[in-house]
Amino acid sequence: MAGESGAHGDISMNLAGIIQYQLRGTNCRGRIKDTKVKSGVIESRFGKGMISYPDLLVICGEPEYHDKHKDIVLNPTVVIKILSETTADLDRGVKFMRYRNFNETLIDYILISQDEPHIEHYIRQENDDWLFKEYYGVDTGFRSDSINCRLSLAEIYDRIQFAEHESS
Image 1 (cartoon, rainbow, N blue to C red):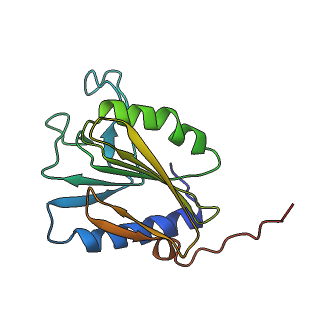
Image 2 (cartoon, rainbow, N blue to C red):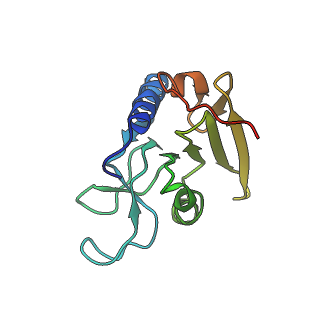
């Protein structure tokens, strides 16, 4: 989405650096927010279709594309979305449903809050069920085993200032 917040931009850049560094020398590559990913039925280049633009994605192996234009990725391994107040419900609901139903290669779907140090991590299991994990606080970290990366919330949220929450 155009016009991202400062926190969104900083988190995106932090993630890109963290993941790219850990992917060096592997068969996986990161892509940033202008990459189209299949998330529905694509009838033709100019007909009706369904694509999404994750904030960051990782493709393992050679990228597979919809057609000769090589502009719609078909084989993401990891999709990362940075949540905003206006897109959070869509990213958790309809978009996640589309990604998991139209991308058999997708293993990790990661949602990152920009309002607090909080990450939602969905992991595809061998039986195609999805395991849900949550991580809170900058002293926390987690792994994406599908790409052999360790993600620290302190690094993801580097330079992010959170508003103080009033206690009830």
